[in-house]
Image (cartoon, rainbow, N blue to C red):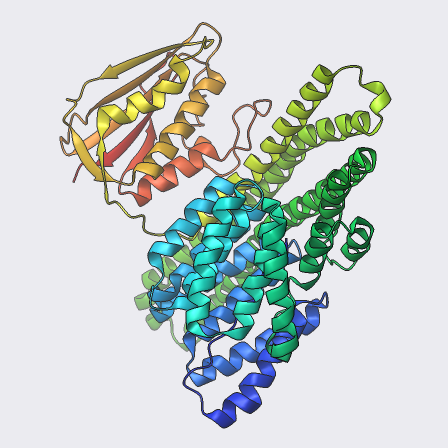
Length: 589
């Protein structure tokens, strides 16, 4: 479903300014937002953002950023959108505009929702509701609209409740454009509920506003509303024709599948559903390719910067040598007095050159390792999806409902695998931009390990799981519960991956021997252990000690980085030789 455009508040301007410059620029952005010409949109939004910054309208300035990210999301440029949210957050922090950070949180919720991670998107939207200033009713309404959007397909009644909250807020604010936009969306949510009376009521109000508002009327959901109205009136052929006015191909096939199903033509619905799944897979492949290429380009840029630094330092070395020679010509006595100083400086420069060279080589290794891992890890589930898609496309090859269910299950598992890999890459990218993690959760140490062990005690696991709780049950400390659980899950996944059948995994909680103010959680396995010389390499991005094991080599890297942001660390116990033992160390106070 296409995302709506957020109106920029122009308060604080004179009447003449609003009627001329600001109003004209805003109208250009609105027109370009609902078109497919990227160049025109980026030019329009850039001009308007520059104008608002000059006027000191920071709320409008960041809303321009937000609309640009939404435009990228509407056109499936998710990696580009995520990078812009990072730049947007960095600028807010640099300017001290912390009251605007909710916009970044909201945008990340939108990105994750459209990538299929609805639970994570819901968390981001709930966090945005906590961050936003509730006196800024327009901003509050937009978050309720986003919550309604992600709940529309699975919980349409809840979606309608959130949408009604947004409508009441917008109605009180008096924004005609936003109000018409929300009523247009209400037609779609009522359609999702199959409440045809509500569809007709909302549609009549929507069309009345179209006739009254003129340019202040939002056309974002216009054709969607017409389709819903035609279905409500059981004019199914008209509804099918109207779908071709939509710019989003996945929405076209989704609506057509539902329309044929509602009309009773199940065969046509099934045929269109196959096209819908094919288009959706194609879009996901394009998105995935853009994300992989974007990450690879970032690595190449880092390598290019390192090479540039190496060239610069080489020229600097030659310049210093020239100074030394000139000093020799000026006088042997001066040269002898300054010889030691010049030599030390040359050594530092040579050391910097070696560091720059090593960084360039490491960047190249990481790029090759990343592309190799991605090629292997993504190609396998894609081949599974492609093979089963060919089987599904020919129903004659399927002999039973059980076979169809099994194929659907395998396709779903492969899709989840690809989404998990991309989410891991996005997660490490977002962690690189975060320097502080909130530590306001009071966590019971032993309960944390019991919770971690619980899923593996409910089924017949191929390994034994042992808990050694050396801390008292009353032992608690302040930290970030979600991030600590994520670290322990990474360590647990690593132990399971390398523990053979019949092996044992031990979870232990205890105080550090040398520092009673440090809480330790260890995960010990009886697997193959870590080779000598790999003790630190295993914490590098994309490094895999066994290239045939599942995964992209990010788990330990993410675990150590998050632990250090929490004031602790993740270390390998090199004294343990019967497998591997990783220790999470966190400050108690």
